[in-house]
View 1 (cartoon, rainbow over the protein chains, first blue to last red):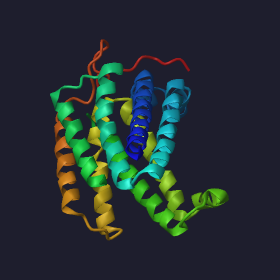
View 2: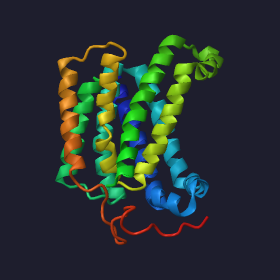
View 3: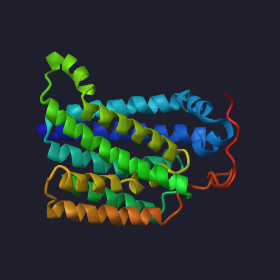
View 4: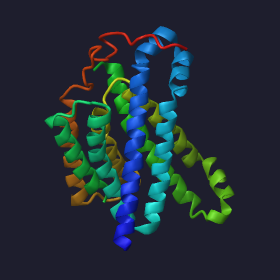
Length: 126
Length: 143
C-alpha cells in the first residue's frame, strides 16, 4: 500500500511537471524568438507579449502543482527515492509528450540524450 | 546557435545551480519551520541567502523562457542538465560535501547525454523554416 502511495505521488509529480514544461514550451513557441522581438520592439513590449500569454500561466500553474505534489510525495516516501525518480522520469516523459503534442523531432540522438541524462540525474540526485 | 543563445543556455545552468545552493544554504540557517508558524516563512524570504536564492531562481526562469523561445524543449532540458554537475561541484568545493563514485558515474552519464543532444540541431524545422534569430524574423505579434 505504501509503495502504491509512493509511486502514485511520484507519477503525480512527473505528470504535473511534464504538463507544466510542455505548456511553457508551447507558450514560448507561440511568442517566437524573444531575442528578435526585443531587437524590433524593445524590452517592455517583449515582456508584455510574454506575460499576456495565457498558456504560459497555465504552464506555471502546473509547475506549482508539481512543486506541491513533490512536497506531498516527500511526506510519503524517502527523499532518496522521490527526488531522483521524479527528476529522471520527467526527462523521459518530456521527450514522449514533446514528440506527440509539440511535434518536436525526437530523433535517436535526442532519445539517447534523454535516457543518458535521466540515468545520470538519478545517480547524482540519489 | 549564436553566442547570445549560448549565453542564455549557460544562464539556465548557472542561475539554477547557484539559486538552489543559495536557497539550501539559507534554509539551513533558518532551520525548521512549523506549518503553524507560516509567518516565519515570510521572514525567511528576507534573509540574505534565501533572498539571493529567489532572485537567482527568477533569473533562471527568465533564461529558461528565453531558451524555449528559440530551441526545442527536448533540446533545452538535456542540454542544461549540466546544472546538476555544477551543483554537485559547488556542494563539493563550497559546502565541502564529498562526491561518491555513484555521483561521479552520474556526472559522466549527464556529460555524455549533453554531448549527444548539443551536437544536433536546437530546433525542429517548421513549415515557416527553422525559427532561429539568424534565419527568418518572427511574425509581428499584435500588442
